[in-house]
Image (cartoon, rainbow, N blue to C red; front, side):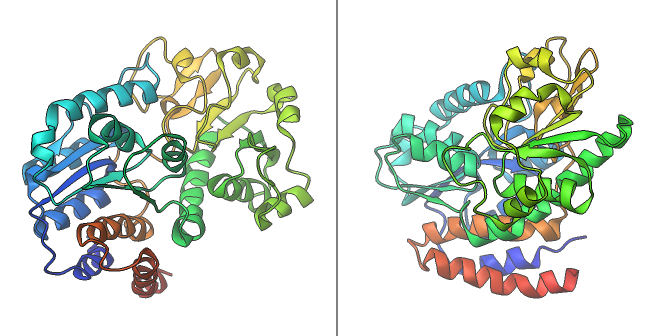
Length: 384
């Protein structure tokens, strides 16, 4: 059994911290790693009833939810619900806002020294901002790029710390996610018996570059990569993109759209819609559409899900396949996505930021990150 020693050491940085007047509002993947972190938070003094958690249905494991409920945490009842005929984002935002309006009230909130939002995707930030954003005791923590952009584009009335741009998230975590994604993508290709498929990777952010590198540079698959933000940033500013470009793999978005029917596999890593309903008939007749980003927004998921089904099903339109319901292929309903030794640092980083906010910033963010990295190195070397 994995012992989560790094996570325990991270909590040890704040030994003796008072948490009985702190409220945590969390929107998280509910897997084994998050379960352990929430349990440690309660052991450290957070009252279970002050731990209000919303799970995302595509990354919420029922056994983890039951374990947290037995600890006394308040878990949103829709955390495992799924309506195949609704896009996740609109459905989830509506459910989350209604849940919070019922669960929290202004009179309750005023008694807390600190209300801390632990968010994945920006949904909790937007809901809290709508309900009680003017309160002075609210702070936020966001861990994803899509959530960071969502918060930045909204008028959020309270301070928020994005950890998505930290060295670890960009440099250390991305290869783990990309490797995991590549292995799952490769299994799907083998199951569909696609011989030497022509692959398109859309998105050249941290994950997209790693996925494209795995597919094209390391494993020699045919295909191309492109980026929908072609005009807003230099797609060749990273070494991995330069290597892909030198190998002739990067194409402009307009060329990708013109050649859409050539690709046997299309992988979306942008966190934004990349194809619409009108594009479906232009796709390869046996294409596989695979998401490596949050939610189901990369592809026209609802069009594929008209006949209904379960959240992690593959959905078909004749021989065109929407893999894993349009949700990230790295989540499959099991209680573990990445191996715990690969994800523990990320979870420790999130919850240490939470503890740091509860302590009124005992340390600077850079001090926290450097301390965690220094503690993580022995575990990393041992695993290697």
